Image: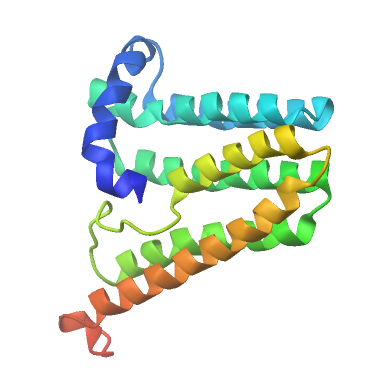
Length: 207
C-alpha cells in the first residue's frame, strides 16, 4: 500500500544515496548485493540472537536494496530483465528472513503460512498481468512488501523489549500470515474485477 500510493514521492529520495553507487555498479549488481547483505545480517542473527540489532541491520539492508531502482534510473539502464531479477530477489530475501526467524524462534508452521501468504500476494498480481496488462503501481493493497518489512522489523523490536516475558516472533508471524493471506484475497478480488471488465474477461480464450 505504501509503495503503491507514494511511489512517485519515494523514488526520488533514493537518488541522492544512489548517485555514487551508480558510478561504480550496475543496477543488477546492486540488486544482488542487496540479497547478499540480507543473507549476511540474517546469518549474524542466527549467531548473536539479538533481535534489536537484527531489526536495525535488516532496516539498513532493505533500504540499501531499494537503491537498485534509483541506480537504474540514473544509469538509464532500466530493463525488463532488471525488473524481473528484482522481483525474484525480493522473494528470496523474504524467504531468508522468515526462515531465519523460524530457525531462531522455532516457529516453522507460522513461518510457512507467513511466507506462503507473501508469495501468493505477489502471484495474484503477476498472474493477472499474464492475462492482460495491468498497472504495476495501481494495486494499493493491504500488506505489500514495504508493510511486511516494517512489520517484521517492528516485531523484532518488540521481541527485544518484551522477549523476557513473551515470545513475540511466533505470534507476529501468525498475524503476518493472516494479513498476507487477506491481502492475497484482496488482490484476487481486484484481479477478478479487472479480468471480467473487458474483452478477455468473458472466459473465452483468445485465438
